Image 1 (tube, one colour):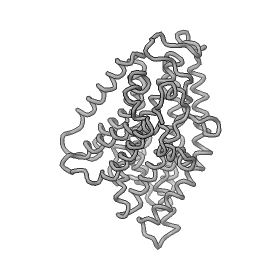
Image 2 (cartoon, helix red, strand yellow):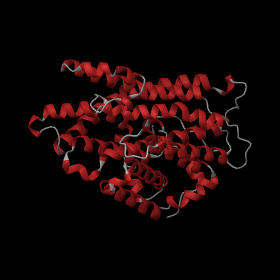
Image 3 (cartoon, one colour):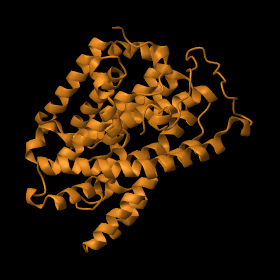
Image 4 (cartoon, one colour):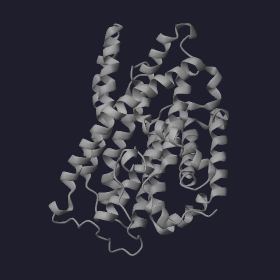
Length: 389
């Protein structure tokens, strides 16, 4: 019954409870889209912001540890890994969406929006566009086009400088939010990702970790996890006059504070780390992308149950998980492997005159070298990394 030590955090190669949280977020989104009024209490529409916060934390943690092992971050390697992690499944499901629309005679709607999908400008599509839920992929991909360059090329390893830049970007994005209530106002989604990045930056430094360390005590962590559950249910009671942006920002901040609690040894964190939840969390990306295809299959198999309701929701989850498992095994993992191999070719320290050899230590005494750099993504069967983003 003690909080996590800094060295223990740095030695972690897996954050299984974060995969469990990803699984919960995916099911929440399914509940919002297909569960009907009986699941409105879960407020699953806001679950995508859990994905955003988790993504910011995990990817920034990976980059920070890469920097500390090799002395720098290879942007070419990062973009290669990111492309092969995200795009193959994204494009395949887009093709399946088009093919199914063609069978039903509605392919024109997909084809009219094709440029938006291919340029990852999905968040600018009209509300009735097909494959619209992929707007979250567009948000993340645009964010990671610039974040590594800003945080790891323009800013060096000095903790205070990187922290100042991260906070400055947060302030800038918040300032860009229009004063009126505007659902899906784009800056707030980047705020959510950046809050996850901020937690990663803070926890990577010994003094920053000491600030958040009390949240990793099992008793405190349990209280934080329960409190977040209460926040999730209370979202539906948010005063409309305060606006959706303020709600999303507050929720994302609560999710960011939840992250250290999920790294603890608390019982609730261990529950989220159970293998069934981790299994779903590992497949949550594909599951999220195929959700509307899965719902159509469930509706076709259960025509008497309508288009929404608990039965359709559960059926969509089951079908979605089956489809996601196939995509995870046969598309995601092979393509992740391709990305990692290509990234290794362009980022080998021995091939760059200005790169440090493996195991090199930064000269700054303020941030000790972590014991191991994290792989971008490793299957659970072969020593899986903290999570996929």
